[in-house]
Each structure stands twice: as structure tokens, then as C-alpha cells.
Length: 124
Image (cartoon, rainbow, N blue to C red; front, side, top):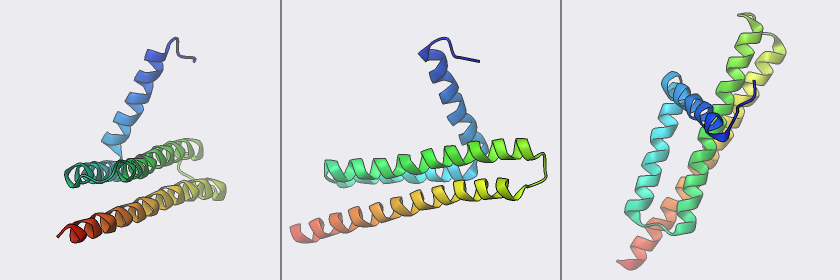
């Protein structure tokens, strides 16, 4: 079933994000942490390139979680309660992608935080 226009496609995408927000606790946690990171960057007046790196890392985690949620839903639908080893492999790989993206986001946060602290201590 093909969408007739880009507005309809946009609506489906927004609905998908909304349903994920409502149904996935980890997505909500990651969303809040990303928002906290962005607000902290604004308040601390980090450099534009650092800000963009934080935004990129935060969005990457959310995108990976959306993909993970989609893979889990499709796998659960096709398996009908019985987990096939290949289905488990797919679910584990998708969860691994979220883990790697999250680890990247933590590294970005640490690097930016150290930079801000160094800048602050240098100004004192």
C-alpha cells in the first residue's frame, strides 16, 4: 500500500515514533537523556561542532532503537511465540546495534564534558 503524497508518509513516520514513545520504556529513557544532553550543551555554550556531535550521537541512539523495535515486532509476529534461533540472532543483533550506538553516545558525552571542564578551568 503506497502512500499518495509526502504528507501521508510523514504522518506514518510520526505515528511510528509516537507509538514507540508510548510502548518502549528504553526509547523514552534514551529520548530524555538525549534532551538533557542537548540542553546541557546549550547551557554550557559548547562549540557548535561539539553540539552537533552530541545531537548526532543522541539521534543515532534513537534511530537504532526505532530499528530495534521494528525488528523485534516483525520477529515476534512471524515467530508466533516460538523463538527460532535465526529470529533470536536478528533480535540480538538489533539490540547490539543499540548498545554500540549508546556506547558511542557515552564516549561523545565524556569527550565533550572533558573539553568543557578544561575550558572552564583554563578560564579561571
